[in-house]
Image 1 (tube, rainbow, N blue to C red):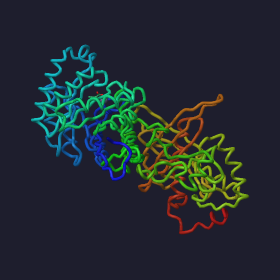
Image 2: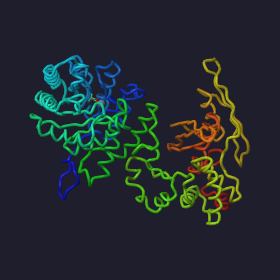
Image 3: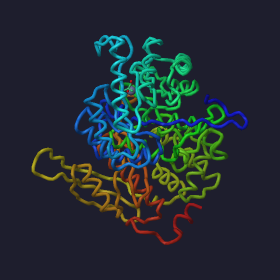
Image 4: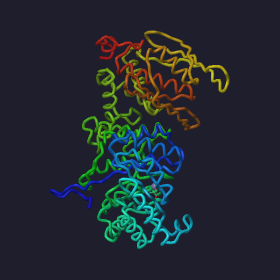
Length: 535
Ligand code: KIV
Ligand code: ZN
C-alpha cells in the first residue's frame, strides 16, 4: 500500500500513463497535428512518463500516422494506442505500433448497465466474450495489453470482477478501472479498488490502474485514493486536459508524490524539472493558456504579491513555498509588484535593476509606487525604473511608445504595415515604418528596427477588462531574446497600443537585464550615470 514511509519500508513503484495525446487531444479545442504530437511526445519523454498513449489509431489516418511516427521516433516510454474491442481496430493499432521499442494496445469496452444497453446493445455474456476475444488477439500482436472497463465506476461490482478477471485470464497485464464520467469520490474509489484487488482472480501478473475524470473536480483526489488502495498505474494528462472537464492532472499527481513523501511512499520515474516545459509547450501548441492560479503550472503558482508574503519569501522562501520553482523547471520565484507589495519587495526589485536607494528615497518612491499600482494593478520594471528615476532626478533610460499607426488590409493585395514612434531620453523620438504578416506583427518589426533588438514572440495574451465604468486592455507578452525569456505588460484603452507597449516593455527589461544601450549594443562594464544618480 502506498502510505507514509515507515522506517526501512521500500517505496512502491507507481507508473505514469500519459494520455495527453489521446484523451487530452480528443477534447474540443485541443487537437494537434502529427508534427505537434511528435514534439509533445518528445517533451513527455524528457519528463520520463512510463507510457505514452499516442492516439487512437483506428479513429483516423492522422491518428494512425501520429501513433506510428511516435512509435518510430520516441525512445524510452512504452508507446500505446487505444482500440475498441474489435479485430479491425486492434489490427490497425498493432500496425501503427510496429516500430515501437515497447508497444501496448489499450482495449476498452463499456461494462456498466447504461453502456451495455444504450451504447453497445450487448448483454453481459456478449461483453465477456468480446473481452476474451479481443484481449487474446491483441496479446499476439504487441508487447502488452491493457484492458479498460469503460464506466467501471457505474458497473455492478460483481460483473466488474468478472470482466476484469476475464481480461486478466486472456492475458491483459494492466486492468484499468476508469471513472469515465467523473462521478466517484475518494472514499468510494478507495473501497472499490480494495474490493477489486481482493476479488479479481488470475491477476497475479497484472497491475491495477486508475483513470479519473474531473467533472466534479475530484480527479486528482480520486486517483490518490485509488493509489492508496493499491493501484500501481495512474493515468492522466498534462495540464489536466481531456474529455469534458478533463483528466487527472499528471503534474499535480507527480508533485504530490514528490512533495509528500511522508504521506505517499511512492517511487516515481519522472524528472520533475521537465514539468513546466511540457506544460508550456502544450498550452502554446493548442492555444489554451493555463489558468493563472492552476496548481503547479499556473503563472501564479510561485508568484507572490502580498507584502507580508513577499517579506517572508525574501527572508526564507520556505515561509510560503512548499515546493521550489526549480523543482518543476522554473527559474526563481516571481515577486509580483502590485498594490499589495511592501517596501521590502520594492527595495529588492530596485536593487536587482541596479538601483541602491536609501531609506528616505525608498519611502518617497513607495508612495508614488502605491498610487501607480492602484491604477495599473501589476507594475512593470520599466514603470518602476521611471518612478525611481523620477524621484532621484534622472531621466529613465528606457523606450516609451509615443504613437502607432497601422494599415490592416484583410484579403487585399496590399501588405499590412505599421508606423511606430518611440522616444528615448538619450536618442529622442525615433520613427520607423515596417511591414509584416499582419499589422501588429509589422509594429513589432518597427520596434525591433528602432531598438536594435531581435526578438521572437513566445506568448501574447490580450484581455479586455472593465471596472467602474472604464474598460481597458491588458496585454501580457513573452519575448525570446538571445535565448532568454522576457515578459512585458501594458494596460491601455485599446488592443493595438496595449500589444505594442507590452512589446516595448519586454524590450526595456531585456535591455536592463542584458546591459544593452539604446541601440541594443552591449554597454561598457559599468554604467556610471545610473549608479551615480541612483546611489
Ligand atoms: O474515460 C474513459 O473511460 C476512457 C477509456 C477509453 C479508458 O478514456
Ligand atoms: Zn477518459
